Image (cartoon, rainbow, N blue to C red; front, side, top):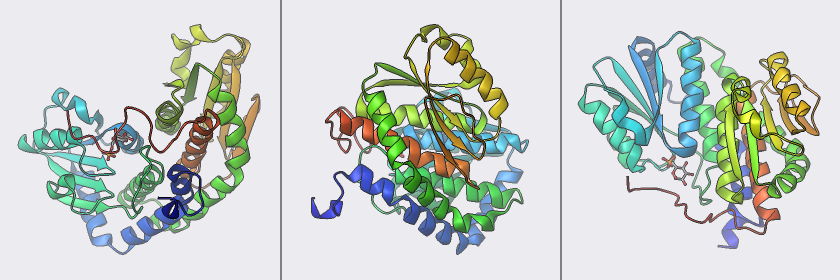
Length: 343
Ligand code: G6P
């Protein structure tokens, strides 16, 4: 086990550092398989509804994709896989099922139900010929390599990269630019270690944290909150930043930590929310891409063509350092399993 960590203290940090390669291999595999990408793109454009399903981290990648689709005017439903009974499938539906392992029972159940009601299935998995892939009409395989750490890291970044590729291809965006996506991920990791360590150590001492973001930053805020909860056992809750004034702000008092995800799209709107939190004494940590926001106790600023891909390793590193500073083993969080095969 020590050998396979290749000098890293934990698999989690090793796997975060493997993210650039995982993204590079995945993008080049998609680029060499454009026939499948083309067919799936047509299905997405023609579908009456695109239902995007997944569990845990994979659901967050799915929510990100679903938002990209609704921004293009596509009717898309992000579906937490275990809540499959809330959606009645029909002919004309396309399901995009996202699962690192390809074995999560909740995801299998959701595709089985919707398929039996007439939907077609596209799966995005990291494990070849997994149960979910076998039940799909179209398959995309990520090339992230094995992930040992229970908390998903490089596979989340790779899911986001695959989905961004699919979206860009299907809607006439510059999908070829994604061949450099790995460099953005690598730069983010290199620029972030110091910031992430400081923020992680500070957050580890807290009882509660908010992760706030607007638009495409919301799924990343959700993933940031999930990750730190999973490995450091600090309670964290993600909220759409604008919605945080409708309730969550009542908890904020002097020193309450709030991590803002600022992907550069709506910095002015986000700033309103930052000021509201600051006025109550909130301690602001900021992950900013392309547009600096200021007003934070600590802010990391990154430039990136693909903000989500740069933000992803930052939230993971914060969670990692929070766990490590509490003396916890982030590779084996209590009560969690890598693959969950019971409903
Ligand atoms: C488990 C893991 C999570 C993971 C989820 C979905 O609950 O602890 O980290 O996100 O399963 O896994 P999947 O293999 O379907 O992506």
